[in-house]
Length: 217
Image 1: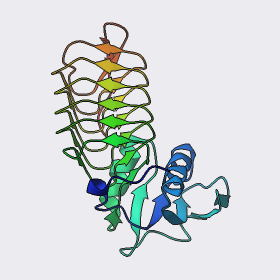
Image 2 (image 1 turned 180 degrees about the vertical axis):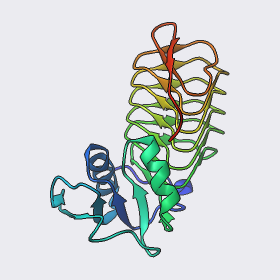
Image 3 (image 1 turned 45 degrees about the horizontal axis):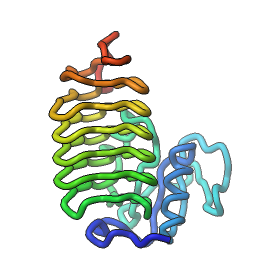
């Protein structure tokens, strides 16, 4: 097993509570267990099982995270993560897969999760409660806003800015120096060669706007 990178251990607790026990929560649980980090309990508003990988799953009516917990919101929906982050008065941790390759000069916000095979290069800044999913590439000097999701296999070239809550789809590519606005959606496999405004939904190669999301609520 690869060692956790020591420069990223701040807010890497030895014991976590996960809020969310569906598919995304399963991946985070597995990632933490792979890194040798204990998860004491998983909480879910609509649990489908009472146990996952040996960890108890409790309904949120039975237990909510408290101030003593180190919490990760293990829910894939960006809007739900934002709502819960604003509602919960807890300490948020971060989760990093041991195989992720992250520069010592990169910054990761609280609540952010970095999956297997990710590459994050120098001076990249990742906001709070982001998902950097399996095999994604974040090049130098990128800035990722809070609650964003960079999907598996997506690649951001250098100096790309991603706004709050934006979802970059699986296998999408963004050329260097572009700015993608907040709460935008970039479709799977899209190739982005010009700036994208707030709330835009973009698909294709080259990427074209097909509609706009209503808002971030």
